[in-house]
Amino acid sequence: MDENRERARGLHKRQVKTLENQVAGALVVIGAWYWVVVVLIAAVLLVVELRTGEIGDGSVVERVLTSSRWFMFVMGLLIPFALLVPHVAAGGTRKAFVDGITRGALVGGGLFGLVATLLFLIERPVFGALDLAWFREGAAGPGNGFTSSVISEALAVATFFLVGVAVSVAYSRFGGWVGTALLPLFLVPAGLSQFLESGVVSDLVAPAAGLVQLLVLVGASAVVLVLAIVVVDRLLHDVPIKPAVA
Amino acid sequence: MTPPFAARLDGVGVRFGRPKARADQSLVDARDPATALVDATCTLRPGVITGVLGRNGAGKTTMLSLLAAFRRPTSGSVLVGPEGAMEDPWENTWITSGVQLVRESGDLFGDEAVKETLKYYADMRPEWDADLAARLLDLFEVDLRKKPAALSRGKRSAVGAVVGLAGRAPLTIFDEVYLGMDAPTRYAFYDELLADYAEHPRTVLISSHLVDEVDRLFEDVVVIDRGRVLVTGPADDLRARGATLTGPAADVERASAGRTVLHERRLGPTTELTVDGPLNDEERAAATDAGVTVGAVAIQDMFVHLTSGKGQDR
Image 1 (cartoon, each protein chain N blue to C red):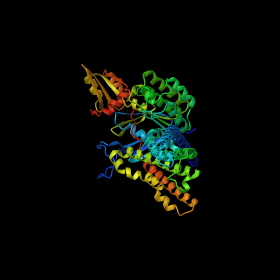
Image 2: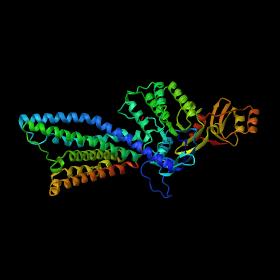
Image 3: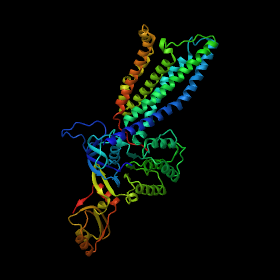
Image 4: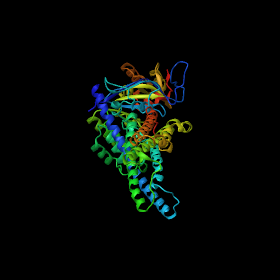
């Protein structure tokens, strides 16, 4: 029996890793196209700002980046449909699915955070060379640091991805009417994630020291991410696989 | 290598949707259209090929889904695993990793090339045989670069067959996996299944409507009718369970006296009756002496007669 339990642990790790690779791979491949589009739009906005001055001061990348959350939300909507049934058919458990999709979301989120931060790092000297004022409205204080920028962006993006997963599974399980009725509930983590980036929260933590601000914001973002994971886990832990349609 | 898995269903009921409260405290009711299985009880022996037979909507797919932990029963218990160490398969990594249910859809990644699905199964399945998969794909002429939507239904089914065979799961279940396959491909699949089963013994369940075509593979049979397990046991017992009596109507009537007639066919003065229950040597000799020809009943015919609900006592 102990041997079986030991083997089960190894198999669980194998299932989680396989799904994590699948999710992260999809996010990287499709995300690459997304980032190409983001860079192009940011470049167009910069040109418009230079010609007309109507876009306004500050980072143009930041304006475009709100879409990364919704991009991940949509990916979260699509991925359970594509992966859940083959995963269970291949002998995977729902628990391994939740763990794998969470780890895939964190890897994907981390890459998104890294790319977004690199874009900020590239944008800053470009603005300087063009004699434009560069600043980020949504990341005052500690949010401007490289590590904190990567982490906060990663946590927010991963949260939105998992919210998309929750919405998708909820509609699949409960149907259109109940799914829509429950929608506000599943969007709570996304709302909290956005709230943490608002001026209200920045003002609240402003009196604290820089490191404390960073820890509070990252900690709060991590709590919101855990909330999204719990929602996904509760929705998926007993989800039945529907009869196949050939 | 993991030994072949056995399985046991004990009083299993499945109702789709929420269970309704009933006066008799039961969770499922055969008259309820949302009920798929009612008090289903059977044991599936390890290391044998079992045919799971039933008419459309009888509950075969639901039963197979329970074994693969695709869903949970509303009532009763399901156990799967090596003989003597069976466990509830639900969210049980040790068990589910040893069960492969291949459904008619194949359960492939819809928007990716077939090779991506096979890579996923290979990564998930501890006993995956990549060489066998490659050989079977070649045999079934499946283009790995195509997406499932670009494949014919038969080719998609062939991919499912490859997943089932190359996975070498201790409990491998084929649920109407033949759909769309042409006859040569089906026969190639049956041959490959038998060859690999002989070389790598495991438990195989086959659900098929082409009973005549696959009954040579069956060692055991489970017949499900309207959500209930009607017959379970060795296929030879089912083959010997009934007999056909053919001859003059009066003699056939006499030979079938006291038996349940499953099917009756008349052609002029000649009558053919399919009766339930084997004839002993004396009965057989008496019938033959009376000019009645006694014949065997094929599994498909017995299945049809048993599930038609038209049996009459004589």
